[in-house]
Length: 114
Image (cartoon, rainbow, N blue to C red; front, side):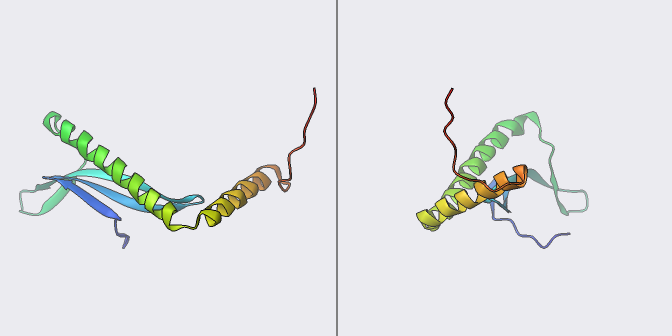
């Protein structure tokens, strides 16, 4: 089992949405797992990803909350960066992707006339 900790867990009764932070080329992004907690025959708590029809409205609501929270976390990350650093990172990332795809460095565009 992984030692990785979730960024945050949202709850609504026995439903939970767990936000997992990942790092990408353009900064953090979040995956979400949604589960329902129940007590098994031995009194041990378990999670399931199976929901009844009566759970679905609550699942949609906790999904909306997870979407909103992941957007807030991404926004908070970018606001903490200096605006100039973010632009430089974006330019470097775009140039690197172009070079990787084409095998040549990105230069200034040329104007072509028709």
